[in-house]
Image 1 (cartoon, rainbow, N blue to C red):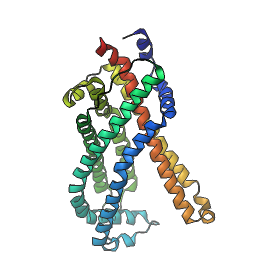
Image 2: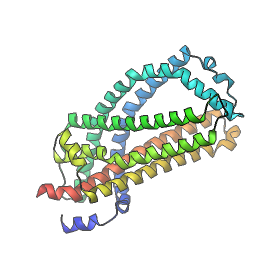
Image 3: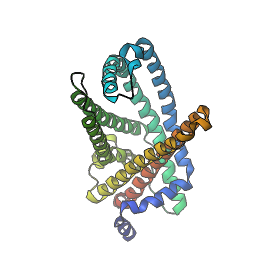
Image 4: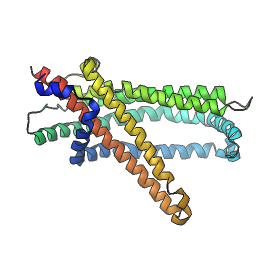
Length: 317
């Protein structure tokens, strides 16, 4: 590793995030591409979800499962009604998910494989032009990128399934119609399981996020990219874990900010009117999604930068 690279390696990963954020801010085309391919998948997917939800509600009206008897002034009774209603909708939802999930995974893999290839290749090219130095050559291996993006999404769905099973267990043991629901115990488990799965994903997902970069930057196969992403060395891996954890904290901060901005105008809702409130909520949601995509690009830039420090010199040698 060159002396400049050694000096850079001694810096904590969080100390370089500001420069990475600045780079992505100076090149908004990167965020635009990221937003474009994500919404190219997300908008049709949400429309499909909305259509399927309307069909399920038409087949199983909320009144038939007791949702019309909800009383939010009595959370104990309402919690039992919600659990019973979830059981009533469960078979219909599972029937839809059996075909929707495979179709969504396939569509995501294809669209994200093309989208991420465009983002990373442009990112590498802009970095070379801005710094005036030779940079890594990103090989556009579209089929491999599609496979790796699909594996990433399947791992995410697996983590979400673990969370769902944990929450289902907590609900089944703490909210029953046979006795008074233990809402405090259930909420404690809900918070613990949610944060636990969130941290687990933040600590482990960098391997699958790094594999597409290795595949393109080092020109290897899918299997070889996965193998190399697990063998990056303690120092390099530590940097990636640190960046991933910081980005997870940033995501939580964005959620909190969105909730604050949504709740702040509520005392003045009568003066603003419902139309303005709906417009404001849409604006806040879009702002959150764009900011979230921006920080996804920042994480990619961090990963590419650390790859350049720890791997490019060794490969060139």
